[in-house]
Image (cartoon, rainbow, N blue to C red):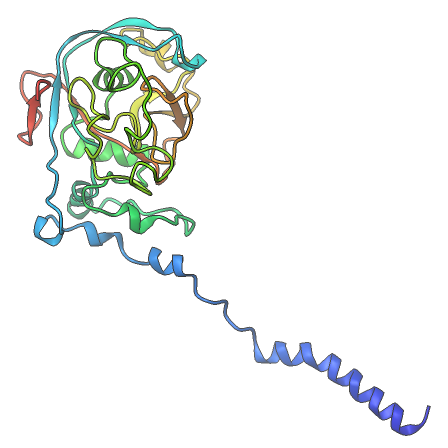
Length: 304
């Protein structure tokens, strides 16, 4: 090999070796910005103001509805194992929210107490802007967050039995409107119902229980007070029996705006660890009948 060829070969080798070394010396270029991450960076406090003039839509007031004492049919033999058995359950009278707790009202709680924001726990929530409307149900709240809000209001989370009676009525119906499933009558999976994410509370007239409670079938899954058991315990069973097999999960009732399937019913039950937060989980509050209303915010009887 002559001298000129050796020089050319040496130059090629030096060039090949020098490329990664020069890259290390220059450093690496940052990745392109993530447009979804930019949306996530917007503070959720944008919905915190308690003044309705800050929003283009009128604020839906919190309203509690009285559910009178008496028996109702709980559970069904038409569903899964954890929806059984079907039985008649007596309940005392109680109050329950006509709507799921909304962003507007929850952020009043955050502002006044310093409680943590209902923000997503990671950057992977892609619908944050679609969930922020003042009249949309608050999302990304754990069971502990929901419980804290209800206590701040002088209320509590409903029991499973209370939730089911309020959404189902006393005649054993499986859907708020009766016993025939209907498509697009609640905010469930898909955009055919008109909403890509959660809807402002009360948007679906048919998703209204015989007592006038909205969005029990769709929009958001909801925390209730009970620890989860495979078969829901009767309200008058001993506390030790109710809690013996709780397994660390709290119960969720209702379906969310991403829920799919022909087996969705008011009697359906889900469960999750109590510190879990998700865009499909919200809540509403309840209160016991104690001779007076827990506060003076929009209480009505169930004939409304």
